[in-house]
Image (tube, rainbow, N blue to C red):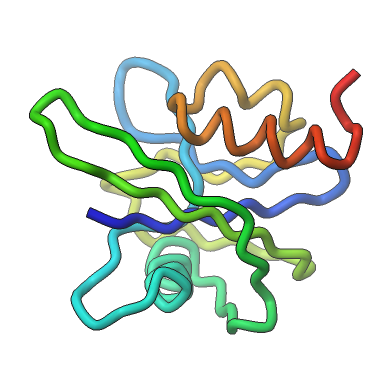
Amino acid sequence: MHKSRLLAFKGEHLLVLEKIGLKKQYTFPGGIQKKRETDCDALIREVEEEIDLQLNRKDLTYFISRRNITKDKREVYKHYFVTTKDIENIDLLEPEKFKRALWIPWYQALEYLDKEDRSAVILYCEQFNEIN
């Protein structure tokens, strides 16, 4: 399975989606790649479906892919893309999945992200010496 994720920053603030559930969890806009769809195309489609943000390929820069093996032995690849597009309004279109969209300092999001997402954010921020 292949998933694509959007890393969107405004200075040190990172766009996250808070998942529905008892335990606080954040994720990034994005989702599962369909057949005959590239990881970039999947991200563009999913971001529009989730938060009504229209992106195109020139708005995105590929950053990294991470591989994970699930408990039931399935391989999951997450492909991370960064955008520098100025994002003003976010309309949450899937309220059954997400409570809200937030811009929060990236370091405050870390404890609520899954292992792969947390690792991608740290790696991205380290390359710009944003971690002390």
